[in-house]
Length: 67
Image (tube, rainbow, N blue to C red; front, side, top):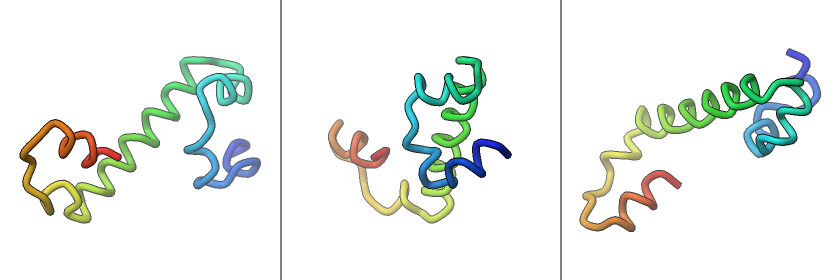
């Protein structure tokens, strides 16, 4: 809750591991938070049909689907 009060959810995803580690006083907690944020973004894209909208024909298509 403290992190969400200091950084809104949009800004929280842009914090790096080092900065978030200082806020959490723990690198493992920082990595868990960043992992959860990344999984949430990918799930949201999946639910919205973002992954099935385009046929993958090359490695660059795979790269672009995750960005």
